[in-house]
Length: 341
Image (cartoon, rainbow, N blue to C red; front, side, top):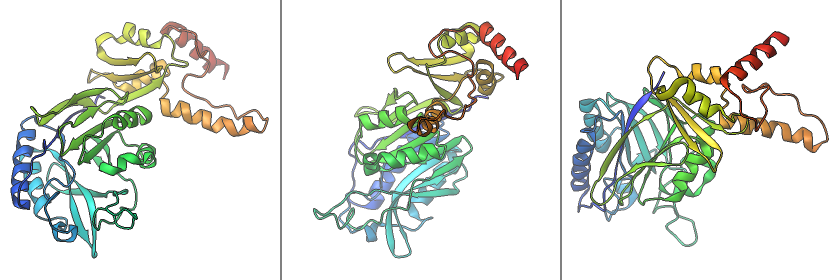
């Protein structure tokens, strides 16, 4: 069934303060404003409480739990929302640029440590004045979906964004010091997940799995929210010719359908509680784009060696790649194949 999730994001618009307390107070006022939109999950910007404070990272870092996570946890409980809380953390004598994931009860679900901090020396021997790189990409399961996190300079490393896709992320948060721009839409497009940024500058974005920007903050609005559906499928148009029209003809407004015509892919979500997307997927033989691409990867080695690849049984098996097919024709074809098998 649909998994409608209200995602809210924030920007600081350059907001600053002389002390960590000043910044934390301002950020908590922003979080309270964000919670007025009744989010299921809300994200704050990278290191929102201490960035720019003229102290070494080791003196700004906190334990987890600590003052900053406690302040966010209080709002999480009060507003029954999950919160992504980015801050500098201290563990076992090391400092990390982290994002703590809090559930609706203010409990700590997990901690992501920035895998790729940016250098602060021209000889590339020190990262962010003393930050230790994290061990690797990780996903976290919330009651509303499976999320991943990347932080700021992680945007320069496509491999960790790809790893989040391999781990099944449906929604990736990117708390950052700056806006980010084009790569955020590219990663959403390439990996077929939602991307939500939260920035200390002005333009935080909510981006769908087709790479389309759904909403953004700016100098005149520091908080935006959008209800998204984390039960979705992205398909390539190959072997699905005519299917989008058939989806509309069969289910009409009970489905949300977004097509990228030039890119040859489309997104399908159910808008009706009693119409599971899995039922639609089975009915039409819809095949996830990622599975379609992986099937090609599996076939190439044999072809390079002059051998016939092992046949693969994909959901659209039996259809022609570029021939439109009605639901009635597809139903007959599938029934005939089943009878033959």
